[in-house]
Amino acid sequence: MRKLFTSESVTEGHPDKLCDFISDSVLDSYLSQDQYSRVACETVAGKGEIYITGEVTSKAQVDIEKVVRQAICEIGYNNSKLDMDYRTCKVTVNISKQSPDIALGVDESLEDKKGEKTDSEGAGDQGLMFGFACDETKELMPLPISLAHKLAKRLAQVRKEGIIEYLRPDGKVQVTVEYEEEKPIRVDTIVVSAQHEEETSLETLKKDIQDKVIKNIVPNELLDEKTKYYINPTGRFVIGGPLGDSGLTGRKIIVDTYGGYSRHGGGAFSGKDPTKVDRSAAYMARFIAKNIVANGYAKKCEIQFSYAIGVAKPVSIYINTFGTATIPEEEIVYKINKKFDLTPRGIINYLDLRKPIYRKTSNYGHFGKEDMTWEKIIDF
Image 1: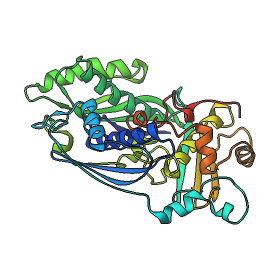
Image 2: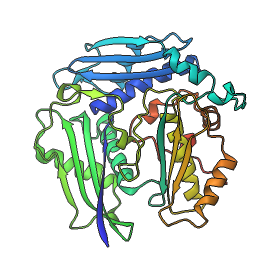
Image 3: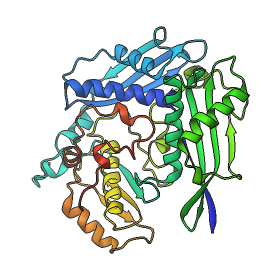
Image 4: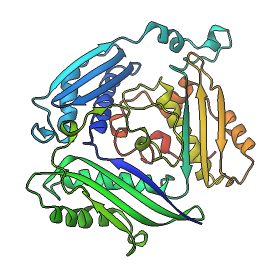
């Protein structure tokens, strides 16, 4: 049986991703001075304006406006007529401290209050988190989202390095992969929408995207005469960024994870310190799922954790290997419980999450990047 599956990615200049990058830049600025900072930073981007809100409890002193402008500059926004100018945009900051009602549960877990001595903070919120891995790519990610991320990242690279000089920061990519008996066999469709300067012809853009982006990333053996290409299908993409569409932190959660190939618990990542299990437990779930596949216990694995606010240990652990397991799933769950401390503090310590590492997670996916601690492979 053959079927098609599609995933999308966006460039770092996409309005939502600009907001994610700003929020994680603020987070890293606090963590670099105080590793125990509690940060929940939300960013909104609109025409000529950035609005920062959220809660921060920290000993650090951060010039948030300076951090914001530097982040916008790094993305490459310097033209208010086409998208945004980091030098002239309005930056509004509205930050308060973490609610004492939330801090009650985070500072001391329910188990510790009952004398069970978990020696861990409680979860900062209720919620459910999923982790996933499969053997379709060397990074153990689904092929559609892997290719989409690489194409979107290449769009930014050719712009920043002047390989395609007329590109602007905003852009989107979509990749459709054909599967036969659950195995990817070819790329069926590639969609690329790239922001460009006014005078650029569509013919020039199409040729450059084909030659300098797609051919550079997608293996020839996955392409054939039936592969379809839609490059700037509207014919024009000059106005972009926050001038073309508003942006918001956490609005690209499917891009951030597995491209829709696996489920998502609903919680966003960017701007949140690791006491927020929305982020840290999702990283741990990915780590464990990846190692289940890497160690040969399954070809495909999805894990769910759930937490209750103020409670340290997960309420539930669920695993699905989609019929590919080489040992019973109950045995895999036993191995997980025996080997890993899944309390917030246990996860933070194991993955070393108190460092200012989050800016580099905010674009092109949080998973599949080999230099992150949750991507390392261990004997399990």
